Image 1 (cartoon, protein in one colour):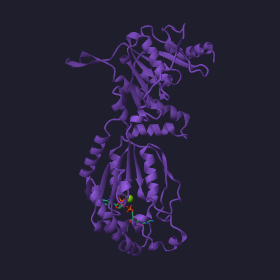
Image 2: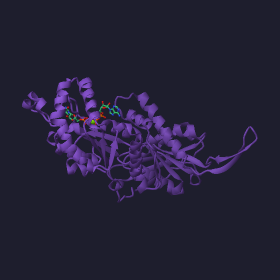
Image 3: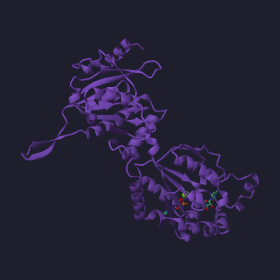
Image 4: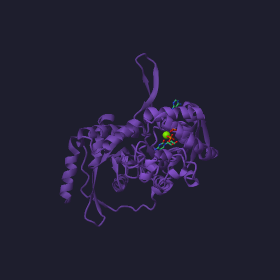
Length: 433
Ligand SMILES: Nc1ncnc2c1ncn2[C@@H]1O[C@H](COP(=O)(O)OP(=O)(O)O)[C@@H](O)[C@H]1O
Ligand SMILES: Nc1ccn([C@@H]2O[C@H](COP(=O)(O)O)[C@@H](O)[C@H]2O)c(=O)n1
Ligand SMILES: [Mg+2]
């Protein structure tokens, strides 16, 4: 694309909203990308791993579900030791009632370690889904588990192998009386799994109880927290969640860069991110939910503008001391994706001026042409720089460098961003540099 075509594009892009601004691109600048020598991802720590053990039917899954629900603004994934049961061979299948599902050798611990290693390094994994009816882990399709901030590993014997224990940042033992566990197991295995009561009781006395005494109970000593009464113990669960939150603290990148702000995630935000990532989502829904997310980012960004104190008189005649919005403000969108954020900004800031920057890579020599159409007095304004997707960061660096060259102080630039590749997977916005 020649420079004429680029000018046409910026002109067309500007549309009606740009009237009154001067085109200031008589001498389009050629900028070099400044090399960065540190990778923020190198500094990110590993996910927080929680182990939840206890006897069969003690309430482990119930406790995990409650923790996950309360940690709603963190990305949490549950890995069940069940997924690592070995498949039974035909001979074992024929005599399934003689098979000990409560012995450590029933589990493929090497595969579990493999999966955990990947998750700890923020790699996605496919985890088998175990079917207790067929005793197989290849009946259902594997579950894709994406990297998460918190990994909960649940199972009767997850404290048995020291290598698995060593992966954990927190170990919880759910301690429920044996008679309660047996009663729950009978109900679960007969009502939910359709097993007959005689078989359930035989399995319990032959394998489940001895394995509890020999392999599970002895691992209770490794637990950091022992929860009596499982899911009924709301105080214990609240304390655990509080501790996890404290340990996780802020987003790791926010600790490294004090001028970066990541919006706290909620189920609403994650739901919308899920929709816009789903290949089945219609164009109409994609636009609707992206607009909602963008609006959130813009509103949060505006909250970081300076303000002045303002007093007003209310209809009842009293004086209310409030604040006044920052007046000298403008938006700048990085063409084209940044333009998708303009409507949200206009909806929040009546009559706001919006400039444009186009970064055009020419050939393979790494040089880029930057075209811009910005308010003449931009150096006196706070700038909301709009670009929803941050890939390599090149466009952001180029756009910010240009604004600084135009006299905008770095501290007056707020970069608003929806999704950052590898770095900020959630709704985010940041001040740069
Ligand atoms: N506090 C509780 N009160 C009553 N029933 C419970 C409670 N906790 C768990 N259950 C039930 O007991 C069974 C086993 O609980 P679950 O959480 O799956 O235990 P585990 O994962 O340790 O096997 C389930 O049917 C569950 O609904
Ligand atoms: N095919 C299988 C596999 C396992 N079990 C029993 O499950 C119990 C552990 O699961 P929890 O959810 O209760 O922790 C364990 O006691 C196994 O005997 C099974 O019955 N059939
Ligand atoms: Mg369970």
